[in-house]
Image (cartoon, one colour):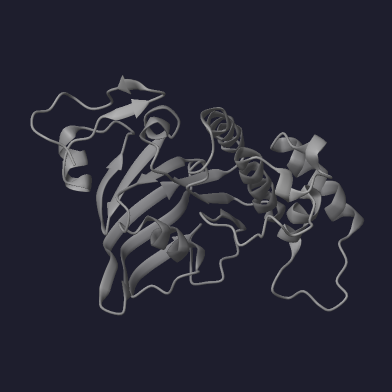
Amino acid sequence: MTKTAIHVEDLSVIYDQTVALEGVCLDVEEGEYLGIIGPNGGGKTTFLKALLGLTKISSGKIEIFGQCGQPFKAPLGYVPQFSGLNKAFPMTVEEVVLTGFISSAVKPFFKYSKAQKEAVKDFLQKVGMLNLAGRQIGSLSGGEFQRMLIARALAVRPKILFLDEPTASVDARSREDIYQLLKELNKEMTIILVTHDLLAISSHVGRLACLNSKLVYHGEPQLNEKIVTQLYGCPVDLIAHGVPHRVLKDHEGGCC
């Protein structure tokens, strides 16, 4: 029997006088691959941070594997949209992934264990970067950098992996490599992916959630004109690799 990994009930988040999320209700089953789309400022990143306990909720309830209240016992991995890593800092790929083992309870003179160092090799193998373990992070491509961050998130051995725009600044080949990697990781864990990439939505994720402060749609990853109009204010055509790729039915009138 499938377990409910995430249960969200009437979730609202308000910053000062600004409503970021309002009345969001959503269930995510264990092993699901959920894509989240929506306009800029629609609350996608806020939603992820609320699930992770990084943002205070104003009202509502979040349960992770039946547990209500933070910190959650289930290990959660997170790949943020903007990494705080300074690419000019002299660190190797291996050293960055090792930082995934550091917790808030770390003590002075902390040292990584032999088992942790061995585990890093496994994580880098999973993301196809074992041969780059000793590479300085400043020399990595955008796609390599993102795969390194995914490897770091694996250090907690997550039951749920959250990713915020992991393909936003990578080339088409690297983007496809990341999606193939996430497909493999989804065999072992639940994945929640925030993206603006409609092609990914139509061809990779298992289910889709559309957020614009409120939950506009949650279901199969097949958009129609009505859903997109509610979400963005107008119908949208997807252009991929210079070739029109229509994922919505034909529409009349202009588009924003």
